[in-house]
Length: 336
Image (cartoon, rainbow, N blue to C red; front, side):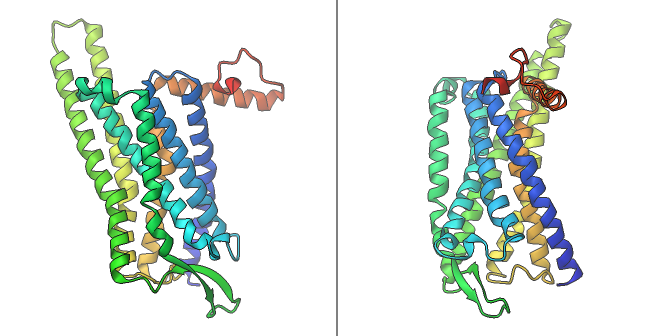
């Protein structure tokens, strides 16, 4: 293995376990806080945020832990053999699709709530949110079914250890490969990019316009401060979410297209090929979305931050005193 290959392997050996250690507990805690505490959000928005935390957790479990991290510590991972070699990508892509489209659904819900009052009472309801969440989860895994035929378990005769490996199906036709690549690319990158950027841009424009209306010198000073504060928080949320999603996803978006078309079937462990290095870096950045999405949406809420700080303080205090938790601590953990 070259020095570059050794460096990439060591980087991923450290990065992915850390990502899972940071991301899974944070998503779980976020889910519990939204479930048990009132964070001054509508019920429908709360359901979307809880669903995103579940989808992100599944991404971290299926992709980061069971696939990527496991391959560095197991000679023959469970997905080297059938039927797991064929089923693996259904769960992986299903979780990734759900994570992406729940973010899109939440963006649409916020756009409707802010801009269309006539539809708000019909679409921004808890019942509608539950229906959309169930539909997103179901369709995400349904659209991942074609990946069942993309891989096959193969006995690696060129390896001195003679191990089984899950590799791309060389018998797959070019039409099947290109259709799979471009449909998945459109599903998790092109369409979400268009929808999120468009709706966030329109929402930001609406907020700016609304605040201009309220920027009246005849308004009381406290009202002017309130509207400026609301405008600043909205702009920070929208711009941060959009730019973070784009920056973390664009590298994987480009490298996966190149890898699955011009370099389909290439040895992904050969880091002398530049596309393999770029693709792995893009994967690391893209999977980071599963650990930061909930922070970008939820941690801008002061009520959530206060509850999170209370949980952290309570945990630290409990570790120091080693005493049972008291009922007077204002934390969501006590209600579980």
